[in-house]
Amino acid sequence: MEKNGNTAIRILIVDDHPVVRAGLASMLGTQAGLKVIGSASSSEEALKKLQHEVADVLLLDLRMPGMNGIEMLRALAQKQASPRVIVLTSYELDEDIYRAVQAGAQGYLMKNTPQKEMIEAITSVHAGKRYLPRHIAARLADRMMQSSLTTRELEILEMLAKGLTNKQIGAALEISDHTVRNHVINIIEKLDVSDRTEAATTAIQRGIISAGT
Image (cartoon, rainbow, N blue to C red; front, side):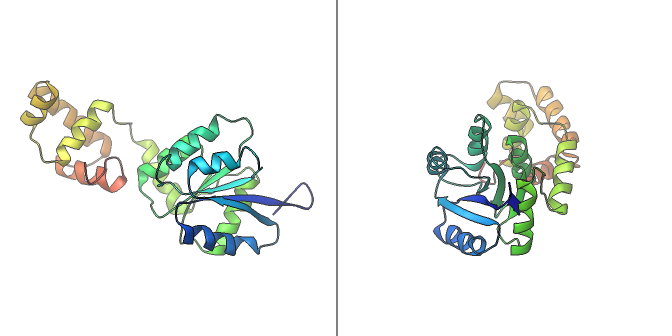
């Protein structure tokens, strides 16, 4: 767990829930080879801290007010020397995993991950490796094999989730029923589902669109 001899791995915790920040700091702060250098309640606060302090590993929540975790990852990617990031979240939607890894996360863990595994993940990521639990890695692989949905297909998928017909979708987007039907066929094929209803349900389950869309 050490870097350059006796230097402990410096950890910054970024989560908008005080109880989570305190719990993680308490759990990790007593471990040999780890040093919690601080915590932040937002991405903006974390970026300010990183201007004055050096962190090796960032434990980052995805869903926070203001700048969310994905936006934070993208901001870090613009910096020359930035900490390696483990996403620590309550959600394991396929789209969340995919977007986090695409944005530069080196690890993805659930908040209920056992202490031993969390320490193992921090050590591995700090050593330059990627850490994804087996089931998370499998879901990421499945997601990456799917063709990406186009902006138009996402628009139509959102309308399918609202129960709109092809005719209604066509009128809203000012395209023909035939064009809508072709888009729906492509969506069904890309999501590997059997019909439009399953396409909408699957998209919500995977986090591609929100349930409130």
